[in-house]
Length: 326
Image 1 (cartoon, rainbow, N blue to C red):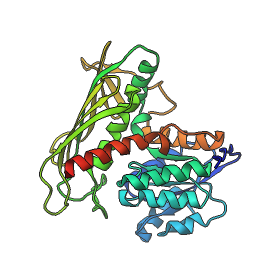
Image 2 (image 1 turned 90 degrees about the horizontal axis):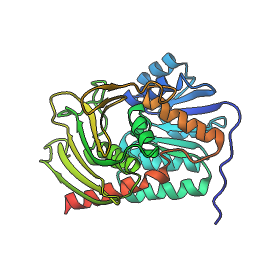
Image 3 (image 1 turned 45 degrees about the vertical axis):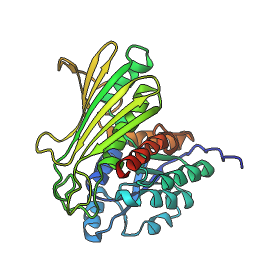
């Protein structure tokens, strides 16, 4: 079977956004800065809250059911910021409805479902992208440019992903309707980024985890080691128990320099700040991610962080899950 060619898109891009929580709002804020894109539909489980957000952002169509939005004939694309467990099935639904789709990280929490998405995306000729934001943050883009220019090669990445989540709350301090996951969500960022920045596939992966939380039913602490085919290594520490600075902190140790990345900021190993304001058109990684999604739709091409490109990350996570459960 021949894979259909992606077709360039002329005119405005009309988008539905599913999930009006903390992350969905980050996308809405980013999209405001992107010309030629209009959010025409907002989907979320709490209709009253969804109407509030829709009114603030001037979105005309509100629903609690993704199928209602997919039925809109003028709709071109969907951004999914829904609970992890829904990502793969909703991505498949968007592709089956003939819509371009960007799904927030992670692509899946069951490898087989992620493989189904990649297969259907390939057959569809549609743009299908996963929100691996670290590929787009200016700090990591700066390091990537140094690597592609041949000026820097990673010897080791040391990464800490730390949150304080002993209760099930989101980034806005609101109760979550679902349970987050250190391996399938938070580790996915670093596993993908390490292979992407090393320019080399992961060939060895080990994981250990701490005690399972009695009510959340997940490990609250985890340690992961990775090795790429080119010899680069990565050590990743993850915790939901950390009562201190929150977020993910990256140390790139290379052959010519050391870089420390904190979200969109970058420092040398001696804590000297590096100006990354000219790396891209924005300092907002989510906005840059969305710009790539819409540019790929317009140009009829595969985006950076396509579902096909990130599948290898989920193969590693699946291997680590089997190890942890073994």
